[in-house]
Length: 340
Ligand code: P6P
Image (cartoon, rainbow, N blue to C red):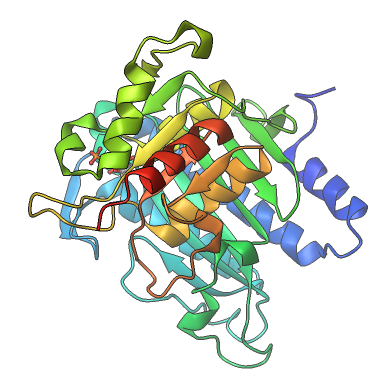
């Protein structure tokens, strides 16, 4: 019966059912769940213990660092450094890769993470989240890892997921070729209990999530796609509802369960040309693995997110993710309106 299966039990059952699984990977997932419990405790009482607000520092993204950002990063780094499972980490909060002393040579795994995404919403008590990608190292065991160990495409992911700190705290994760499963945190027992087994996202949604304030800067295909989802079409249950919290994990999680499409397009005009805002390795890629394993889709608009070969630790990428039919339609619009 669900609600009685802890994440630890679930991980052990998965390990038992996949001969190639090793206890080391299971141990790594425990460590991420532990980090989530510790971060949840501080997020839930941040207002009471003055953890709200900014430190005044600025991170590599040029964003002012919130105290909870810094704290969450520390928790992830320390927790993942505890065992000797992780040889290298990449964090949204840290310019360069992090090589834990005890795991460097013997650690089999690489973890890239955004310790607390959506942190600009912390003071307003909006749901925020931790997002993580797990790779096997590429460098030889016994040697020191290099940044190349982190620069792997999503097709090499062996696990990915997120923790959303909202009205309840939920950990959602998936493994290579595996199901997507959700675990809701019960503070009274201090456990993540399985609440959503084998999450499947609706093939077609009824929600679109995008910051339309920037629509003038986007390519024509995106603009035309958005006109379509807002036009009345009873057969296609349109117009879609517009839902945008401005916190990626919260917007993604809602659309995963209810069906819908989230877009963070790149700017192509108006002097604000860029490659989008969201980062590939620890935002777009892990959520793409979750979306795809739940039956959804994830694209840059020109190629599947999971096929993108990272060249930089903090590189950004345009993101279109969610219900497969909606993502496919947006990609078709971009192709049809391809601008020189
Ligand atoms: P905008 C939060 O700062 C974040 O990184 C994501 O969580 C969120 O989806 C996005 O930025 C919101 O960006 O430009 O719409 O405010």
